[in-house]
Length: 303
Length: 312
Image 1: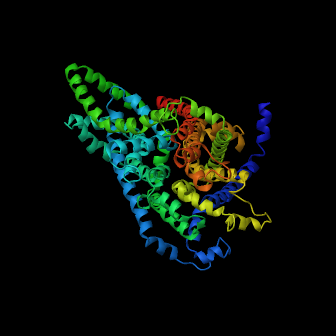
Image 2: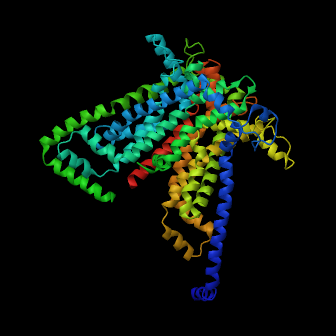
């Protein structure tokens, strides 16, 4: 039986090699074909944003070919970038996101260090708890948080609702658990010899953290920073619930609520706003793609 | 590699154990330092995640003006409403279909990217991940404009093929299709990246052995790739199930739950009832219905993650 199979394979060997390489060439061609199809599917909305943002409202309502710009104009960009309201949204978003990144790092890096290196009572439970917190979605917490903020406001007299700074307290609940989790992974992968050497040289725990761990785990730190920034930049539900006045809005909420006036959709401006709103994460991604992807895959592959 | 580290850790522990006095000294100082390093994290989680989670259970048992305790009254009220059951059904259809197609498209695209020469992979990967990078609120606006009934780019293109104008967001079947499509568009790149990372970790020898045994491409995927990637597929799908089930942005911007509440999912309906309708207890009860499914997914994820931790 087996000799028969070998005999059969023998003579056809040369032909088979040829067909295999031809198969491979065809597989490659098909791969490129389908990749182009998927790329079209994935890139249509952002490209369509760009196309529409270059059109005047007259051209949009003239219902010409929507996929082509006949009279490109930058008027939408000029209009938005000189509008105080839009700049205010951009400013609010930037302040909130940068401050949240800072707060997140200040909370999660020391905590991750303690959880990765200093085994103490309950440290494993706490690490698991941090991961579980990451799985609690914003849509579960926005109603109780809204009520809590209203209560604190009534008790202390400090205005919390409808103020952008309240987002500085709320956003870290989304960023800190994940950042802590991936920093635990990065810190745990640092060889123990390094911190032992530092301890022998008389470094305190804090010095070990700032002099050894942070420099060595810098790629992880950058990945966590990018994650914290993109999450706070993109967050939509919390600012929609907690802020309403036009001067307190962040970009995603501002664009969706103010540029759509009643039933009148000024699509040229909406698309321009959306593109400008998507620009900061896209620029970061373009320059730091590898860190971005490292952070993305770390969540499930590390730990 | 990992074994060596563990052994050295044990050696150090043994060395420390020989000097009990200094050990206690170190431990005492260490736990104090550790406590202060983790204190902000514990406070944040306790005050802004755990407390609201428990508080929402309390809220769900109050009446609309939040003066009176009504027990399970809100839940019983929900059970009697048709809209609620529609939301339950739509949430399940939405999450399961979207996650399935995200996983499928992600798997297919990851394979194609893995197939092409390594030199070009970076470029393609970078291009295909763009939907995941754009804030969903922004990209959904672009979809809203693509679906626009009168100047819709999709209907314009389809009219060349003789397909009549489709009311993408006004017809209830098409509206459900549209919200799922946008969600798949947004989430598939994430699966692609995860699967690509997993594909790279499958040793080439396995494929060579399969090729020698005469396996065709389908058998290679079914008997080699899928078993090797089972863990990562499970974790990614479960994780995505949580995120999709709790989705808010896409449905809110695209349809706001319309037409006739047909596309509402838990999060958007809870927002409509709790914040827009200012019936906070009822909104809290609606969002609490997400908990069972989230909890089941979380338990499985946790099991997989800890299993991986033990293997490493």
